[in-house]
Image (cartoon, rainbow, N blue to C red; front, side, top):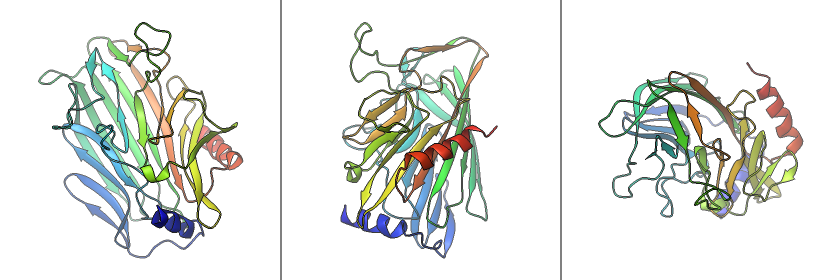
Length: 304
């Protein structure tokens, strides 16, 4: 923890970009590396959920957690539906790291740029094992070049299109529903953070957030570092995103947070129809100042 705090404090001083920033690419990953330290890494396999891990600020210690023992299906920054047409896509067999439903990458284009920004385009197929796709996804990811301070963001746009039949997107029932539970409702874009960040806190435009569920256009997770400084991870939801503004699923003890798009009710995508989810994930070596973040959200909200 001390190493993390020391590094984040140094990063927040606004140092010049690290020299020797390069791309590292394998058949399963693309990473931006600064002076031998990973800034961010995108990981992909044909028949498993793609994810970002680690996510850092300017190559410091990982802020994300990958496949922790308590929830080995948590994949740092990733996307998963809970169930599609009553088939489970969220939880995975700990031994095989596979879900009953298959999330398959059918096409992938990685475009790392000389300015250290990147574009990642994917086509994904959701289907029971050995069966045709019931749902298709087109995912566009745009990672900005790091700023001099080390801050950068990931723009995430996913469009889901039903096949020849209606598609039911469902979740664990919530309290007040038959067999509902207090921890139900989760599904969608998710962030599992390092346990070293448990002292950090959630906030939105109104201030600190303690409720498990709250509608908000953005949610920040941040906390103090040594020297009286702070760092934060912020997720913005674009106004064009399906069911905006959605409730947020927050678990401080993990830590974990997610814009829970089907928390309040399941959703059926009619055959041949689509829905789009759109987010921006900001990582910055500075405080989650509500006024500054609100201004950033308004600028993002105004983008076509």
